[in-house]
Picture 1: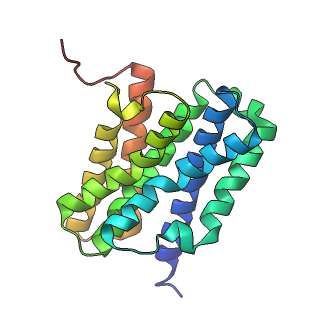
Picture 2: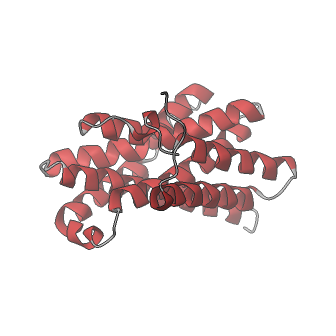
Length: 206
C-alpha cells in the first residue's frame, strides 16, 4: 500500500493539471464570448490535447485521456463550472494566464516522468515533457483566434523546458519521482508567473 502512494499522488497531480488547464481554456472561451458548448470544447481540448500527443509519440496507445474517462469528465466539469461562476476567476489579475502557468508546470513535469518510465532518453523525455505542457495551450489559442503564446517572445516553452530539466536532474540523482515532479512543476510555474509580472521575454528579431 505504501508503494502505491507515490503513484496515486502523481496521478492526483496530473488531475490537478487537467483541471487548471481546463479552467484556462474555459476562461478563454468566456473572454471570447463563446456559448457553453464552445467553452466546454476549449476546456477539454486545452486539458487533454498535450497528453494525447505525448502518449501517441511514446506508444502509449490508446492515450490515457481516452482510456480513463475521469480526465475528460473533470475537464467538462471545469468548463461548466467556469461558465456559471467565471466571475470568481475574474477577480484574479490574469486568470487565464495564471491557470495556464499552473497547467504548464504540471504537464511538463508529469509528461517528462511518463516518457522516462517508457524508457526514452533524457533528451527526448524533456522534449515530450515540453510538448505535453504546450500542446493544449497552443490548440486553445488557435481555436480562440489568437497567435499561440509559445510562438511569441514570452517565456513559455523555455520555462517548461527548464522544469523538465529539473525533473531529469532529480531522476539522475535517483530522487523519488514525486519529489522531482513537484520540483519541476514548481520551477516552471515560478518562471512563467515571474515572466508575466516582470515582463520577461526572449529576444525578438530586429
